[in-house]
Length: 171
Image (cartoon, rainbow, N blue to C red; front, side, top):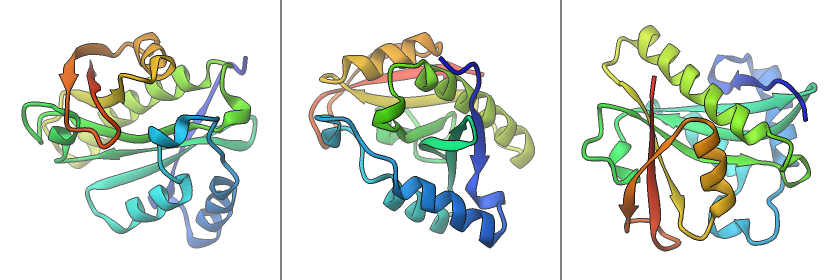
């Protein structure tokens, strides 16, 4: 297992560096059966780059892109949270199929929470943590988030792919 991941904020890169990272993202793939839980990584990053409320990240390990996620402000109810503004929404989280099972997902999920805390401080928000939803049929994803310190806050029935679990971690 690699002992570290780096989070690369796509919105903070210059155009050339962003293009290089997006090229790496285009090569990321999902394992069999994960298409129900995660979308196309490149498309997710491109959409996030266009919205002010979304902050897209590339997860890097050993000098290469191994995953992606987006932190979104003002959208927590999309994961079954009671309001939109008290926490960040973690969405589009995925680790490339070739890099799964090495602990990188747990490291990246924990790093995402630390990054959300930094964003809150930098942008002056009042968020107190991070929320996400993970499909009931995705026990591996649930385990990753639990290992990263997220706590199950109950069932959420609003997901496109069936029942979800709402999970939360405070800063």
